Length: 220
Ligand SMILES: [Zn+2]
Image (cartoon, rainbow, N blue to C red; front, top):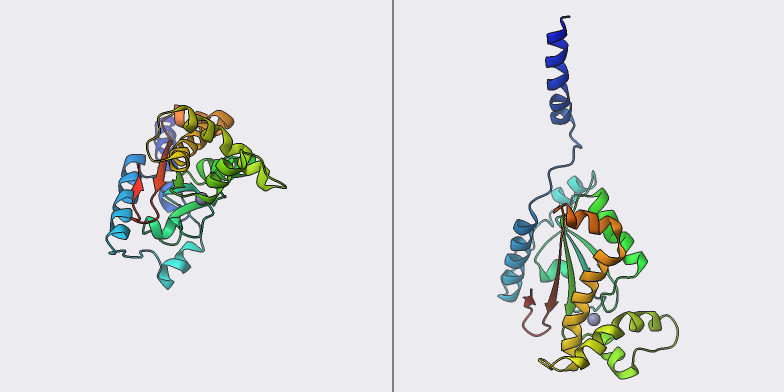
């Protein structure tokens, strides 16, 4: 075989190998396109016109081979804010991390890192919500509580302090809800070299949003 032919083969082979691999990871969709899909899904949910996509038996079976979620949602554990319903998404679409008060402790951040690094997810939405019980408790208890709940309240307390120091817009609890979502989004970057690097390389967008319990609307 001539040297020239070897060089041509070397250039062509990796492409052929990728095309032949049925488990090859599809290219992640652009973060802005993903955000638009989430906004459109929420608009359907708000209007009572949810499509409940990706819930078929065939899709469920297909997903058994692997997952390629489009976004991570770091949301509150509150029973009234299930991300798949709020964004009208289905099986395999969202990688969801839920914890009361949508705070970012090392365990939550590790889950987000897994989705970004190993599943190639390019969008993280930190989803707070109005009238959040964890934020309300933090306001009422001054950021301190017995047992493990204290760890959650301690995470939220800086947002409450910040809300007290700024001009009130929607009342102390809901102002703190907005600030808490923003602070968690910032904490993901501050506390995770992996996420920081992905943001710097423009592979990842992290956004904060707040869900309204009555209207069903997500404010971005
Ligand atoms: Zn909540």
